[in-house]
Figure 1 (spheres, one colour):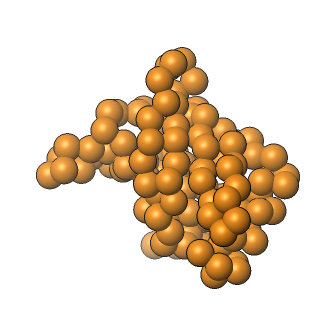
Figure 2 (cartoon, rainbow, N blue to C red):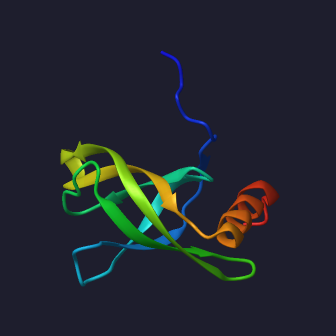
Length: 110
């Protein structure tokens, strides 16, 4: 099966905060992997495919907070751990934040 991903995902555990646009409460989790095209992470409640999430990604060395919008591309149920795995792609991310994310992933300075 041919890989459709444009960017290689880097296994990276970053603190993120997310909220569904219609929600008030923000929730925090750790990413499983990250790329300039999107990220993968687990959540406790079902977030349907196609939903738009507002996220904040915490980068270190030096600390930098990225705010972006992602779209849920796929959802997998992790019944054993009572959670859901989300694959997302960036819908909106400021250019300087994307450049910082790319620098962070390529530099190895994590």
